Image (cartoon, rainbow, N blue to C red; front, side):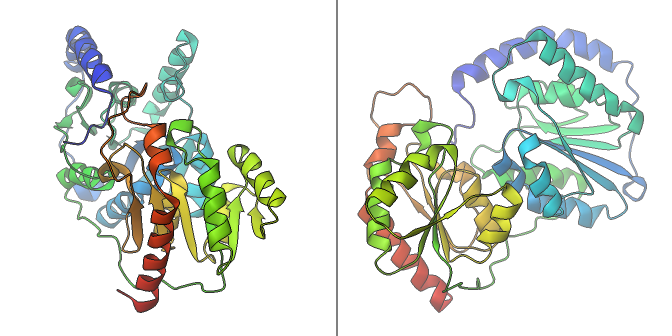
Length: 362
């Protein structure tokens, strides 16, 4: 079984759910229940505001919803950092950025009241369907305040009373497939990731996206340096400049390595990435974006299972440690020691194999 949330947090969330359920069940008595005719659905709200990568993972879901309800206006509520990219990729008819306190562990009461007010502002739109794919009690509460005619979501952490149509979570499904599972209630069909042969950009670079906000998810700088030394002998190599990679870029310059450095916003990154050869990244948003753009991807995972968040696509390779994690760690899912144990030779081998697969269309 894939562990989606910290088991301790799930336990306490379910306790809280039981404590507050009488209040919300009482409030639901005054909520009008409607059966919706699919031909008359005019507005659909989709909540996916935790991370940029989460938004890219539901791109096929947004397309499926549009295919099923072509006349409906689909509004995507996402994190502020994803707005311009989501608009550029035309993922929804309307994209709205929102910052909610629980995504950055802000426990200010004023921020929570602000999130509630923000949600309630959409009630005047008379929303037909609202959907949340996370199964987080806080997201479910936020969605309940929209007062849509119909609402769909998972109950991983409780809160079934926040939805008109709640679902038990599929335990071993990838994040995208889990989202498809939910919208099947609406008659939407799954859109399988297209597996046409990728255009191999032979003149492009092998891109390193080494940045990661959580050091437990990061691959050590010395590994990236060794990888760059090896690959730069036969390939052009580039590095994406982030706050976390400034030191790496400086070390590369000190070693006299010839590498390109990309610096720009997300939309500029997306446009530039489309002409590159291959991306190597940790478990993070760039891998999902590259796979969406049909750029070959090598994604480096540590102790966390790739079954839940791996990039989806034919030309995606996952590199993991050889051994199951048995380290003493302070995070329920991530392990910096496991990341450090991923050998450079293993990544180099995957680069060779993946490029060969793309060139031969297998």
